[in-house]
Length: 256
Image (cartoon, rainbow, N blue to C red; front, side, top):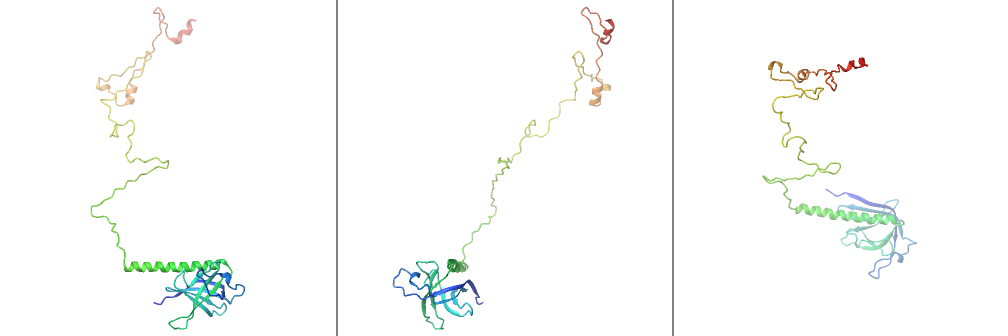
C-alpha cells in the first residue's frame, strides 16, 4: 500500500533571499542579506509522505513549484536557523532532474510575522518525534519484551487491610460494641427467679400489706387481679392525749 501525502503546514507568504557564501563556522546572519529586496515571494508548504518530509516553495496563484527542500533530520543541514533572528532560515534546496546526483544550493527564507517561523519549528519537531516513536514501536514488534506473569498461582491468596473512616475522621470499628446493662456475650436478659411477687400498697399507718397467696382458690390470675385484691385501709378514728375518742374528723366542726 502506497503512503499518502499529508500536509503538515501551509504559509501563504514567504520571502526568498540570495545569501552570500559563509566564510566562517559561526553560522549565517540575516543582517548580511539584502532584506529590503527579496528575490522571490510565494507560498510555503510542508508535506510528508511516509518517512519523507519535504518543504516546497510554490507560486501563490498557480501553485507552480519554485524550489523544494528535502529534510532528513531536524535540526540539521537542510533547515538551519540564523544566529541573529528567529524569523529567518537557510534552506538547502535540491533540483529534481531524475539523476542520481542532485545539485544543491543554499537560499535564505524569512517571514514577516514571528508566529509563522514558530509554527514551522513546531511542525518539523512534531514530525520527527512521530518518526522516532514509530521506529521504536516497529522495533518492539520485531523484538517483543518479556511479559510479566502477574497471575495468582494455585493456592495463593492475598490479604487486604482496609481502613474505613467516618465523615468526621474517626475510625469505624469492625467489632460490635457491647450494649450497656447486658451480660457480656449475651443479648437476652435472664428470667426472674421464682414466681412473680408484687408488693402491696402502703396503708395510712405506713405499713404495707401483701395479699396472702397460700390458698390456691384465691390465687390471682393476673397482675390486675392482684392489684384489685389488695385490702383498702379503713378510716382510723383520732384519739386525744387521754385516750378520748375525737370521733370522725368531719364532725369536729359541730362542738364549737
